[in-house]
Length: 239
Image (cartoon, rainbow, N blue to C red):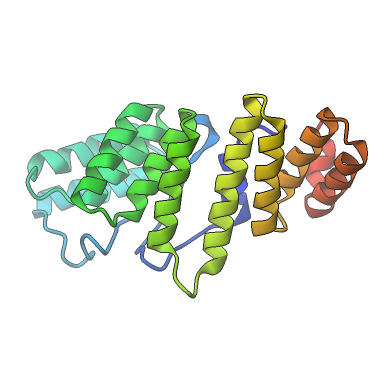
């Protein structure tokens, strides 16, 4: 079974959603992708209720996140929050949570993203960050619930592709966790759902092939492996 690489999401699509001004991504803890954004539902970028000094730290934090300097980003966001503790925007906590998660501080990531959600329950990025941390901690049910809520907030009639891909990743991630727990049937079912949602999901075919082979379904395993390699020839080099 392939190891986790953000469960293939970053490689499937560099996603954007209709409610986000920006949704950059950074790879950190456990190969997962931690996403951060300014959420206009909480604070339009032209009307952020922070003083100029705090905004300077916010901009520096965003830049450091983009560069991958998570510890510097955490320090910047923390300073911005300290300067305006009563006016700190929800996305600041979400972004700091993403940075903390990328450094391996999963408990801090959950704490910050939860704070962001408490400030603004429609903070899509908060649910995504918290779900990613929960996923890394093995709390699959909680992660799926948060990813589902994120989908409810970010999906529009014009962005069904994003919804299908994101949900496919959720199923693939849960299947990965189930496989690690020895639940081959559950893992196969989740890979199958991922494929139904995103038919070009090569990694899902490949992992389902391994699971089928372990259960003695040689024909099914061979068919899935062939499909995976057709979609992504590099998988032919995997053992």
